[in-house]
Length: 452
Image (cartoon, rainbow, N blue to C red; front, side, top):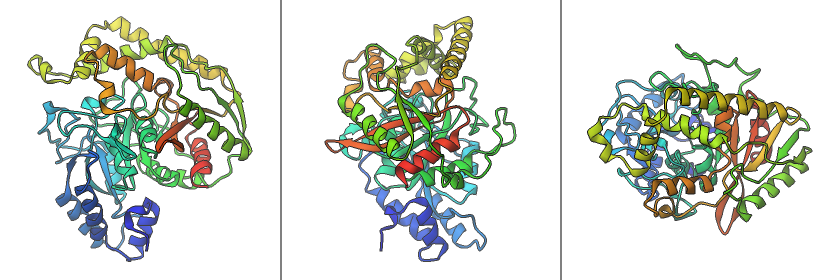
């Protein structure tokens, strides 16, 4: 018999439905694996709460499809009654009184949360490390970082500690760790998933999404979380069919643009990253799609404007002045940088991002999808990100590492990282993106590449 942790969420739900195994047995199995975890995937494990939840589903005759299937929430996501630290010692004992909408939706669908996954302080970096539990480690090589900021979730899925997990993505925070850990990571279109009620999305950069091993699992969880909730100000109409059934449809022959040169002149794609795109390009061509190589269409000045918006978001967090010395240097760098931005500068930056990305996408209207590396470099050693001791240099290194992903947050486009290649035993992802709103089409092609 296949081990429970080798099953994806669909197959696990099936064996639970057939009463081959109970929800409590499944929960205990995964909790035992988490207890032996040395990857730093979790900040908090909620074993007692999980077992109570599993027992509830075992005693419920008419239960949802995914009742008893384990998951966990990123420690940026408010979870009522559960410590939610946001990766910061400042919030080491913080316990929210109410949950984010995403938590309510996922738990109502029957999933059993086993805890809170590791994330960097306030989710600000493309690597996962903090002063609470330390780094999240790449399962393929624990000396290398799992990526950020959903690094704990990606490591947990890759190490079979969970079949799938929600994550959040403001500059690549789902796709970066998905590439580092060799799993599938999906960031939906802006507004497809509502954050609320206590997580405003005023700048439009960040959204919740999914990390999984199969596209069908990601599509199913997207069906759960991509729905209007009271108070929603950005609402997409429901797709013509659930995403989990849409992925089964033939997308037809598509026109796909590809490039590998980063939009930042000082960054360069590694040989491994370029090879990964070549592998994906060959697979897509075999599937009947036309792949056209073009010049990178994104202007470098977007990066400076993104930084204004990103840092202003951090500076808006109401931190007591006496607490600033307890922040990690990377967090303090963004907090202080954002505090220097004026209101007109912020407004101009937000307008620049919106207008520039719209112009670029208008020029790309003849293409259906866009193929690039997810990262410019393979997973890096933990110390590489901070060894300089200079947060300005640390930021430059993050840009060398991730000069592709944030563009899709600026534009609001759906984007995914797919584990189609590896080099010397390390996973190397490719990024596939679509026009805003074309989440279903993107998932269809991802399904062709991974699940087909």
